[in-house]
Every structure is written in C-alpha cells, then in structure tokens.
Image (cartoon, rainbow, N blue to C red):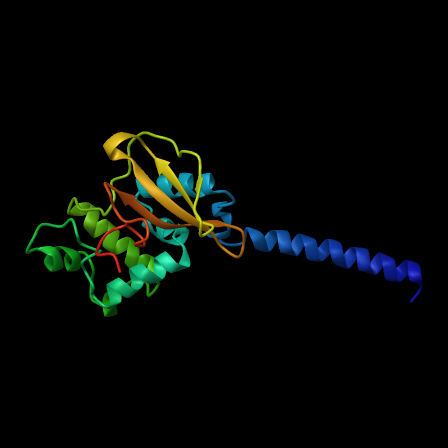
Length: 193
C-alpha cells in the first residue's frame, strides 16, 4: 500500500471512529442528561423531581447514593426511607404501592426507586420537598473534592452535595433539607453512621 493510500485510509478510519464515538456519547437517555457541571446536574435533578420522573432522579444520583438507597431498601432498613410517614403506618404505606416482585413490570432498581417515590408522594411523605421557586446557588467546594449547592431560599431551601464521576459528569450524592445530614445519602435522613 502506498503511503498516500495508507494516510487516506488512516484519516477515513479516524473520521468514522470519531463519528461512532460521538454517536455513543448520546446513545442512551442517561448519556443525554448533560451533567457536565454541578449547576446542570442540580437543574436536571430538580426538573425531573418536579415532573415526578423518579427514574431520572435515580439516574442522576451518584453510584454511592444509589447503593445506599438500594442497601437500605433491600435490607428493609426503612428508617431513612420512611422517616416522614405517620407513626405506626410506615410499612403499610410503603408496601401499599409496591407489588410483590413476581408482579413487577421491571426488575430494574430505578423502576423500584420510582415506585417507592410515587408511593411516598401519594402518602404526602416525599423525603425532600423541592422548593417551588429558586435557582441553584454557586457551588461551594468541599475538602473531599465534592461541592455543595443550595437551591431555594429560607426554610424551604435544600442542599445538594455532588461529586464528579470518572466520566466527568456531576452526580448527586445527597439532597437534604431542614438540618438533614449531607453525608447521609441520598436524602440526609436517618442516623449518622
């Protein structure tokens, strides 16, 4: 093969590969979330939360926050999940909206998270009430490389703690309100470990 043909083939290969890589970066709904800054991640999270799109809320949570929620749920450690439900009715309300596993439409954890959040919403017991108005404040760096961002004002304000994923995306570790513990994923509820 002549050097000109080799260079031409190499250039063509690079063009095709870069096009494939660009297509891959937006291939799935998760890839299209555009979590390239802390402010963008908070805005997308708030938008999904307000639209009751709890599958997307789950996707924006960091892997550590997803694991904390999943561990609590599967261990049936309901304290952080149902802290705001009426006393004596926690298990009844929580399980009322969640069918037995053999009746699930999905086996995906994000679907289960959505069902729990919809059930909590119907019971008037979402773990965090998102302010109706507001904007994300500027990111405040933390010593561990994470950032915190306040959203809303006054007693309705919530605090987001975010970290950067290896992909470069910003993901939500915790959302806490009213003195919640931002080190307790994902809702700042429950006892401090």
